[in-house]
Length: 338
Image (cartoon, rainbow, N blue to C red; front, side):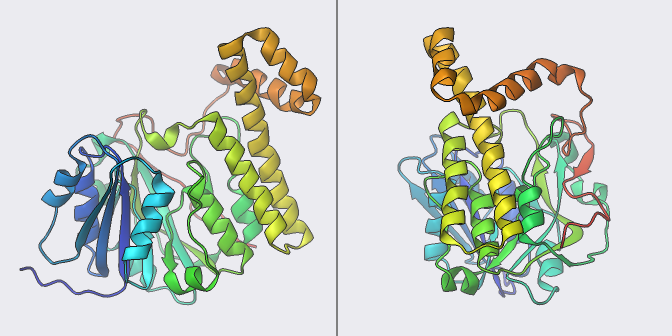
C-alpha cells in the first residue's frame, strides 16, 4: 500500500458519463499530498464512469466512490459527498478537469480565509499533455473578493465566453458551511456554485483569491456545463430573490444582486420567447409579450444580440475546441476586491 501524507482536504467529484476523463481528475486529486479524501459521486451514468474512476485508485485508502441510480444533478451529488466526508476543507473538481501539481499546497499556505480560490487555466484537449509547463507561474498576491465584485463578475458581457468569477473553484472550510447551514441548492442545475458562494458572502465569508493558477478546465463544445434548460435560468434568478429576502444586505450589495437577478431574468425571458415561438408558433410568442410587456426590452435585446453576434469581435476567456493555447479566467494583475 502506498503511504501518502493525509492532511486537510476532501476533493469532491460529481460525475455523469465521464468515462473518458474521470481517471485523470481522480489521479490529479490523489497526487496532491494535502488530499485526505477523494469522493466521486456517479450521478446516474450509463457508461463506465465508476470503473474508470477505480482505475485511478492509488490504493492509499483515500478514494471513495458512491453512485446514484438516477441522475439527481451536481448539487445533490456534491451534498452527498459533503455528508459522507470528514475532512475540514472541501474542494470541488469537475469530472473533465484536473488539478495542476502543487495546487492545494499553494492555497493552504494562505491564512485567514473561509473560501480561497486560484486562477483557472482554460485549455483544449490538445494542451493537456504536458499541461503544467504551459501554465504561467504567477505570484500568489492574495486579495479579498467582496460580495459586490463577486456578483458583478458573474454578469456576463457580450462577446465574452466563460468569463464569470462563479467559475472559480475555491477551497471551502466545512466549519463555515456548517455554522451557517449552507449546502448546494439541489433544485439548481445552473449557477449552483454562484448561489452557494453568494449565500456564504452574504453571511460574511472571507473569500480570498490568489493569482497562481492550479486548476485546469477543459473546454469542449459538448460540455454539460455549456448548455442549460430555460427553466434553469428561471430557478437561478429566483435564487437571487431568495438571497435578497433572507439577508439584510446593505444598499450597494443588494443593488448588485438585483442587477444580477435582472440580467438572468432577461436571459430567461429571451429564451422563453424563443421556446414559445419554436414550440407553439409566432402568435404564442407575441401573446407572451402582450401579457408581459415588461419582458419586451430583454427579448428585443436578446434577438438583436443573436442577430449581430457574428459581427462582434470575440474576447474569449477560454480557447476554442482542441487548440493548444492556454488562457486564464482572471486577468493577471486586475483588482477584483473592494
